[in-house]
Length: 281
Length: 321
Image (cartoon, rainbow over all chains, first blue to last red; front, side):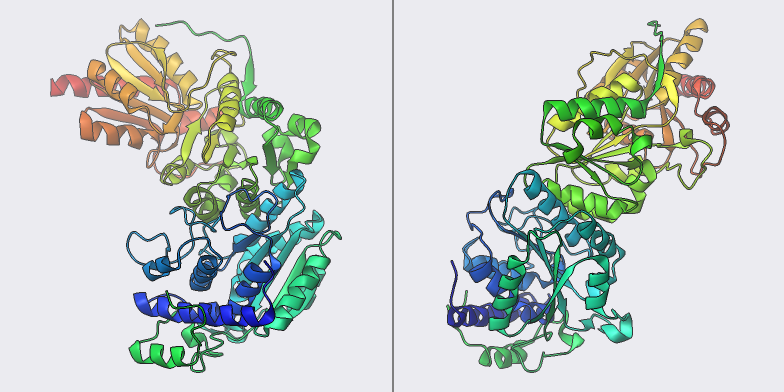
């Protein structure tokens, strides 16, 4: 299950190709955050998590991942397809009528790999806590992972969950925030400052780690470090520092590519920068 | 008119508490969550019996709904408990996305529904919750009428796979249903067979409908009284069968007239058998402070108002001829 760094890099390159092609194919969707989080998804599904692509909703004995910022569905779908949850060809149906690959992830269409609907922000941390509590009740030692956008944590429910997890020693939970400093209306510093994230989460009682989110070696290292810190009474929060749009030079670091699709010319420019390693869908 | 008597009175929320304990004893997957209202929701017996299967979330209802949704992954059957207002309006989007759209097996159990919450006033007296919940695809909506029915419903929903909204209340009311009843989700209960009018009642208004039926019987009006405890899915067959016989309808509920039981019945009749209908419900307003009895009288939710509505609707039926 554990892929080496080179294989992970190759997989990430293909997933990035899939992302821009999927978003181009339906002329909608969210490439920026998807590209920024590709290394994280790749490391999680091809190295860190113990999971079974045969997919069982209850995931007894398996690690679980919840995507709370559901708009970065392209990276999630491509990762699941490459991990064997469903056929890669289905990526071409993204956001199209009668597709299982809805704009935002949902269980409603029974797409393997999805355990909760997300899109309306701020809900995934609570859900993950619930799944983690169920694992504890079931005597299941496996772990629960989440991902959140940094803009997303402006939602109040995140802080309800942030208070709950340490109080209840939910220490089988590894959450990650994609700290790219961007949201739809501009940089988070302009829209609504997040302040000192480490100090905030530590004050709530979380064990906080930093990660270079676009450095595959660091992503794997920090996720493994996080795993080694589970079971010690505290939930774990990884502050994952990424660049929105990473991998495509004209998309990098700008909120303008949060939810905009490339045109034909931009698609070509983007694909020229991303090696086709595993075959396009 | 079939005779209904009672020897005891209890609050429906105590029926929930007793049902929750029994559901927990029957099935070890049943878990309970509460947002700082253990006493009000009568959850103490469950917590005492199964402390490890109870989650206190504090005053954080959105988090509670999300945690409940997550606990279903792994096979748990979560029952959330708080007041009806905080169970629905406050957390509508959480229920919509994480429970209903995600089809999670969460039981949203809501006490202190409607005006009979009493003195706390309109901030706490939600009269829109049935409408909010029944509009969610896949959500089952139940509003029980007494202690025994609430207990039976609580046990029944644990055995049903899917999201449920269970609505009950605070005041002490007569216990008139069978203590050994089998609660069938989606199946109307024939309280009294009659020929002149169909009274469809839910929740605390069922007892008022029985009192109204007795008054009407003395005046020579033969009322059919049907308890619709499950507002969704609605027992359309029972509704249509009754109205085919009686030709007119009164609906009675502790809810806004917009979006409640009355509208569900009206929709069925509009399509299949348009018939004169009168609503006994709150007339699109908020509540206010007062005793439950004072409020039910002031807002027209008692036997007297049901009797008046029956007379009016029969007159309309006769005019229609």
